[in-house]
Amino acid sequence: MAAEPRRICSPINYANLVIFTKGAELPATAVNDKGENVIVTTEPSDMGMCYRLDTYQNNGWVRINRYYKDGAGDEEYDMGGER
Image 1 (cartoon, one colour):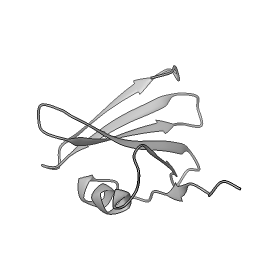
Image 2: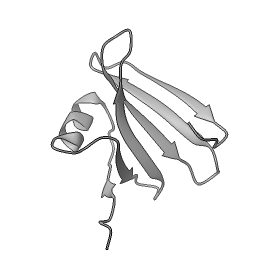
Image 3: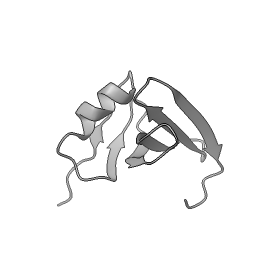
């Protein structure tokens, strides 16, 4: 039997993602407060390593958030296609 995905709770920021992913193998799956599936991974950027969260929203869209160590972040949307 597969384990239930971990719940990822607000506020979502770099520091909390460090705690959330400690000891986890990435990419990791999670569920947010709205019951939406989230994939958590890391990726390189011009600002250093960042966390990337792909949230499969209940409306069919995928919200992509990146969180950087300096506190910056960005957000984009995809119509639900494969990444």
